[in-house]
Length: 522
Image (cartoon, rainbow, N blue to C red; front, side, top):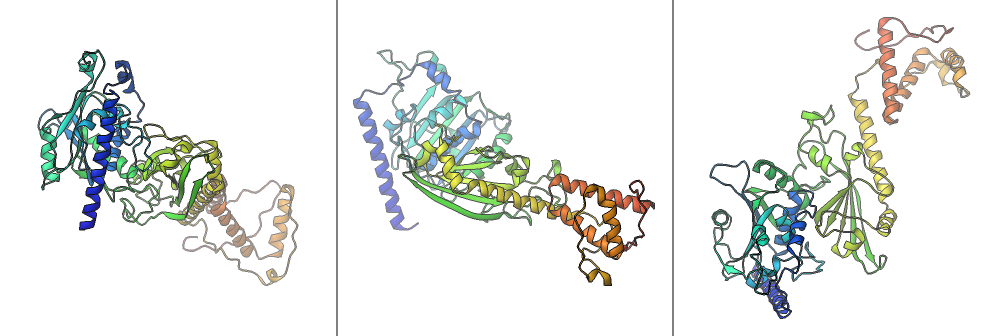
């Protein structure tokens, strides 16, 4: 970073802090320092419906990224040293621009943000921080400092809220003013390691009285966070580093097209990309303005397997398979952050075999209404008009094209891995008489015996058998799965009967005299 970049960063930070101060002054003039909702609302908001703790913690990371943080740490603290079974406190720590002390009161309120309806970053409504924290614990604290400022804190404890501790002299609920404070020891110790030159500015959100953790051990929570954040923020990790309890999160492209992402070079299998499509929406959906980019890839059928000759089942599934399984369907990414995966569209439904086709739709926040983005940014609900635009952009055709690519790859894999049934060449060895042109009428099922007899009379039996087997192998390779299975079963039964010295024939048929060449065993 050069001097010019430092100047730009300082101006940007001063602008943000100035906007915060103006917001606080305006709200103070309105005497709007209460929670503006009864206790019942706050208790009920704990059930806002996050899919898991992963999505809730993503809300806090979103705020850190939007505060221009270069590093975000998610820290665990435990009741006693050496115990790592279940954390008693969680903290999200960043080195962003921080918040002015007066802003802390509003950051704790639902809807309290100077970035309301902002479409440039990840946040927009000001609900994320309080909703995410109370969905996991009954108390949370926001510590923050601006550059060359002191650390201040504001705390909300739901147990004290129930006991009317937050009512002012007029009986209204009110967030207390920010006060100067020291960071908790586990946070200070982590910052000493991650910022040896000192923590100049940033925000720390500490959640305790944790009563709604989805994982009973820190190891389970850590493992799932690393994977979830690796995928959700894979495009944003170039600018902001994320660490989970000291472990750096590596980007994971769910389409497996990014060479610098984790799992890209796991083995010899690689994703195959189709051309991406970008469309600009300006007027087609009313006031909505923004861009949409569709990315496509298909994967070899062995992509999720350790042993490439077998399916990715059980212990044969490699570390890519959980990504294939969980991010299965159309992946929706808003301003660079994945917000949802949907397996149904108005024209098709993704099934298990579709794990090997990858589709991502990246859209800008200016299209939030068209994509039906929820307040918690963990789900989309597309309007009919938006689906129509995606259809016009070729999405259904692209999905079918990807499916065909995977089907062909599976057929090729089946043919390549199947042992030879009989050693015949796929090319026809013609007898002298076979160079003539023979017009053979297509036969009905009742004429099969007649047609077979004519072929064996007019062609050398060896050449006829070679040609028939070649056609069967082509049908196996290109046909549908159920048809390929039928052909495979037929050939195996035929080979078994030949080795046993008998070949069942239709009633009344005579066994043709056919000589079969084999290689190796007879």
